[in-house]
Amino acid sequence: MRLTINKQNAPEIPKVFQLLKDMEIPRICLYHLVYSGRGSEIIKEDLDHQATRDVVDLIMDETRKLHEAGHPKEVLTVDNHADGPYVWMRMMREDPARAKEVFELLQFNEGNSSGRGIGCISWDGSVHPDQFWREKVFGNVLERPFSEIWDDMDIELLSKMKDKKQHVGGRCAKCRFLNICGGNFRARAEAVYGDEWAQDPACYLTDDEIRPE
Image (cartoon, rainbow, N blue to C red):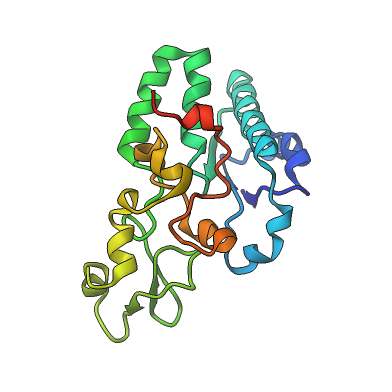
């Protein structure tokens, strides 16, 4: 099952988890809204920061309930890499021993990998940083092999995406979780601030939480 969390369906999350149990659905993917494509038309439907924190906590609580009841499910939250640090901080409060393992996995994953670990080839052959940011085109596989496009460091944006942590600004630049978040989604930064290297406006971590220790 897949759905994008927003103001309209967030209150239904407990019912969604009940549906997972009742219909024996093994896996659910809950997306945070990315402000691009049709998503740019419903930015006002996105949750505010506190509501996002609340829904991520709710998802963790509902996941735990299913496991404890003998109905383990694979539950993913996608497209807001603040989730990783947020989950880790909760684990530090509730299960510090397990939190160490969680942090190591987050470091290995390195957060958002748009333009680096993942890319998108559209129906017409256009190459994009990811499936959401189709406004940015690096080339076309009908004209040039993907391997040549993807490794072409003369494409300025692509080059910066592969070393994104050196270019992000705002809160992202000073965040202690930059190495495990990767600067989150550049498409959201551009949609809200007109600057692809600004902070991700959907990051719901507080200034105190991201401050270097």
